[in-house]
Length: 322
Image (cartoon, rainbow, N blue to C red):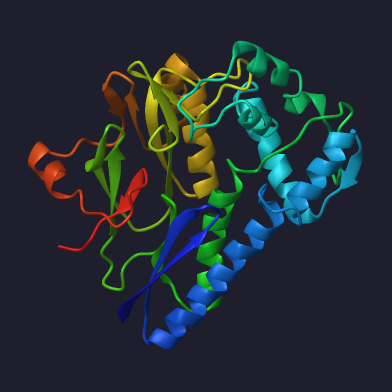
């Protein structure tokens, strides 16, 4: 079997598919099948598209109305509700409204008044969710699946690839990685975890034959003022960035679980590492002072310095072959 690579952009991020197949045509069909599904989900749940179903939901939300959703959307909402409960209200898909105050492409912080004004429109517990009906009693709210849908899309790729007859490969959606299956010779995939303050350098390397991996952190979107870094992970209860952890990486069977667990850990601040430890998933974290922890072993310095050549500059990199 030969390795087939396909790079593409979706959901606002560079993506890549790596598949082993007996023919390029077979791999290409599988890749096209996967990409079509990723784009389908993007069309449904992008907040940037006025014709997306998410935008339709938010138009209803803005007016304080109610809407019936399909089974797939209901599944995402159920998962969002579970994350809200397990995080004690910190993982909240209604908090995307805070982007009205925060512009991470600027060099200015929002005023306290700007942030405070938005807090009254945040809170999953302010909605009525009785599947399949979602009701917004308070006009002016909105929801955002940004913390779930990319990971959900990654998880779907394994079954889609299998349906297309390809069982060896992986999909990398901007650092959210789902292993479709090991290499044909049984060898695992080499995955590097980027250090949050050293671009291109990896401090952990994983050998994965199955499962998924995702990270949360202030790698890219942030504002730095007077030496203080304000990352894009915002506490929905305060409206301000978390300040304790710089990055969290989690390995799980499902990418959506890895992604939400890493985000919840970031949001829990000083309580995050203990919460994640109790969850029992393999993980690694770095705090803002550079202290590290977790159950994933550290790379020797010589090795770490030599593997910063991953093709992605996201939080997680698929490393090139030796």
